[in-house]
Every structure is written in structure tokens, then in C-alpha cells.
Amino acid sequence: MIKKFLIGLTALTLTSSNVGAEPSIIDKPIPWSPHKEQLIERYTQEHYGRVQTTIVPQAVVVHWTACSTFETAFNWFYDEADADGELNVASHFIVDRDGTIYRLTDETALNRHAIGYNWCAIGIENVGGVDGVEDLTDEQLDANVELILYLRDKYPTIEYVFGHYQQDAARASGLRIELVPDYYAIKPDPGPEFMRRLHERLQDEPLTFFDE
Ligand SMILES: [Zn+2]
Image (cartoon, rainbow, N blue to C red):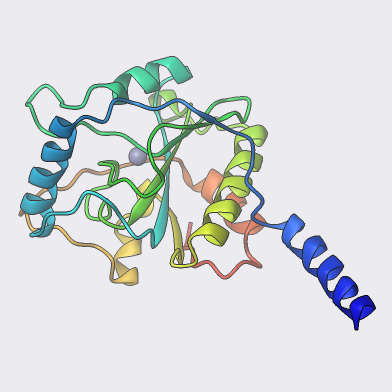
């Protein structure tokens, strides 16, 4: 009986070490004041018709920063409000060129990074893509794979992974909500090549991707 239990435990340990272990993550939080909470509440009321400051993650949206350094991206997301006094853009994670993963906010905080999906999506930014050049690195690909497996295991509600440029295809998920007419922006990030490789690496996982 004891032996059987131990064998079972070993098998479980081996299985769970293959997928979903927390990768090395550096916490580098952006400010999160009561004022920011108010900005989020205002945003969700306007765009989703309800007040919401946290999410139950159902999707991961992959981005590139269109800038060449982590610091530039971090500073871009740092301020709580944008120039119009509205909720500033931000994502949950930034992956640097060498694959270093930074966590900027709580994983279940509501961040403004993908029109229509902020109410249910975790955002991963990858440093790169300046002038639309598809230049994300192998190290970033590895880090995205690790990070998505970790998130998928931690939040079994996550079913979809898509690139920001796939926002229209992702409407098939039924997740898109946007109450403001014509509130839309065409996005190229993080490029079809990166999404194709990410999809390939995660094809055996119970995750839904969209045509690259
Ligand atoms: Zn994006």
C-alpha cells in the first residue's frame, strides 16, 4: 500500500515537472493606487458595461512592444493615466530579448492591452518589433512557452492564446466585448512567424490557437 502510494507520487511529480512549473520571474511592479482602480472602473464601465478591476483569465494575448529595450516599455506602462487622463495601457508581463520575464502587475489584475479582451485576458509583451520587423528571439519564444504553460496550469479557465494581430479571428472565441462604436485599432504584433512557432510548441496542450 505504501509502496503503491510512493510510486503514484513519483509519477505525479515527474508529470508535473514537465509542464507548468513557475518559470523564473522578476517582479517589477508598476504603480497601482486607488486612483488607478478608479480609472479601471471607469474604463470597464464604458467599454464593458460593468465595473470590474480583476479578471478570471480565459485568454492570453501575445504582443510585441515596438521598442527595443525593456526600460522603454516599462516606462511606457508606468504611468497610471495616459495623456488624456484615461487608464494607461499596460500588460501583465514583459519578456526581454534574452528571455527574462518581468511581472508588472498581479496576474489577475485588469490591464488595458487588447481592445475587447481586457476583461478576460492576460497580456504578454515581448521587447522588439520596432518598425514592424519580426525580430523576436528564440529565448523569447522559450520564455513565452514556459510562461503560458505556467499560466495555463495555474488558471485552468485559460482556453485561448492569440497574437494581438489575431484580434478579429479571436472573435470566434465569443470573448470579445466592446460597447464603444468604432473603438478599434489594427495591430501587427507579434507577427505571424512568432505565433506559428508558439502554436507549434504548444500544439499538444489543451489550448485553442487561430490561423496564423
Ligand atoms: Zn499589442
